[in-house]
Image (tube, rainbow, N blue to C red; front, side):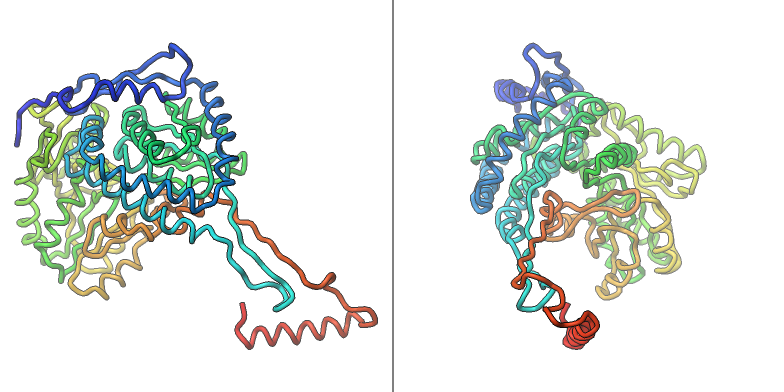
Length: 523
């Protein structure tokens, strides 16, 4: 493990940060708040704070821009998003530097964000026009009714994004909104403002009209609440508690939302799993971004006969991880984001140990590496009633449980109000898919932790139960930002008995016609 101090100033362009923060929608001489570099705990930048009046101003400007943007051909909108793909890859080093400086993550996790945004932009640019084009549907009367399905933009979308993936979760929810003809007012987490502002500047360089993407800053309950009050639709990623509040407030206005919320994700290692592959993948699945990942695994259910050989492989890999602060690819895991995150991780570990759990490896904070570092930690003997069993840790902590059968593994995996992501390990793919279908989870990866499903941008991604509503990615991730519109053109003037024909005769004829449709399978 490295103990070399890192000077963030050597990799961050202060002039760039000043230009970026000037793009926040805020009144002149607004109050400012400092963001902090997790590697060192030192100030990174000062960001102007928006007021609720600033939020209203942002929505007014976005609405003006949206009317013009929605009138542009979808192919034109898609071309601009395609340019985002190219620019993100061209500027990957600069972007990764800022993501690391702002989020404290390892370089490999920062590049994962770059690659994911490139994939998202490519998918939206290529698939967006196909998903949004008008489609013919079956009409009431074959040959006499022409039925058309179209999709109109919602208007101005409110995007509220978290701190843990400051690039991916800032821009990837905006791109499908733009291709669908919407504008966006975006409230990033206060600790993720700089990367969001850089993403916006890249989109503008790609050709996106400046007014179409407005960014506001400030306290979540106040400024985020103002975004919720003005938006025609909300995309939110964050805690289940906040998601419930947002859903309740939007329900009063009958406004829709997609909410990706918390998780307590299980990994199932079945009795025929390839243990080397499973152990290697478990390291990534549990400790990518120091466990600060909504898709990360916090519960490992291992077939009892494989428990010891699996743990031997898994613990050996965990103990060899290189944890530290470096703006290169030398570290496997970086810092937690804040003192609050470190306090939460410590509380979960301490509570588990006090109630009888055992630390198999890790378990300690590492102030010698930086203010908020914590070792990757594996716990044994975690039981209901412990924080580590019942609540999302959102840090580098995972608990291991032996199971006697697939049925027990599925039952325990489903014993949670959450249902975001799950992982199944087996050498029998058919068996893996069968187990996956029994899991109450919006996403299941077979022989992978999270990247296979998340990176397959044609798949809808989202949670069940307390893990949220709606889906990002795929066709659903674009269409959530639209209002479906049905247009029916009737070629006869009246769907009623012709002159001289009684209703009895007419209804008998209609019944016969409906039976014919049933027999021919038209639907």
